[in-house]
Image 1 (tube, rainbow, N blue to C red):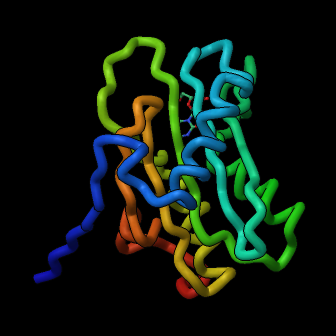
Image 2 (cartoon, rainbow, N blue to C red; image 1 turned 90 degrees about the vertical axis):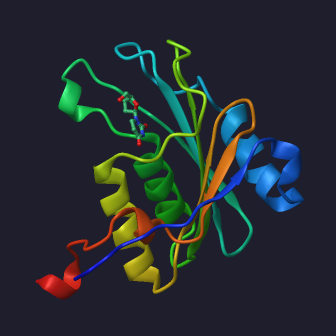
Length: 158
Ligand code: THU
């Protein structure tokens, strides 16, 4: 038998996080709404910190041809990899603005973004830590994004 479990640290308020984590979540919140989401109205912002301490932001970019759209997380990873080549992505804060106000808890990245995060950690040989947050400050911390994509397919399988 194989049993897979994940552990998340949960916080109710931004103030409960350390300064560094608060800074990353605030950086993501600051750019929330500046993406291009006229079709879903669902805005997502991701802020990642590279090992040199710089913060790179991505927001979701939708397209009238829907599959062309890209999620905030993959935009952020692309920006970081392009602007800070060779720097590991230590962590990423992800926040969303839900127009329906249905969600009270943080949301986790979609499957495609989990795959991209998994590849990121493989290419840098170290985990990407996730801070999943909402605008009110509720935050779930996942020490390794790979925990959200168990049994993943990767370069080692090719
Ligand atoms: N979205 C993200 O940016 N990240 C995710 O992990 C889930 C979904 C975006 C894509 C689309 O622009 C909108 O949210 C609704 O799916």
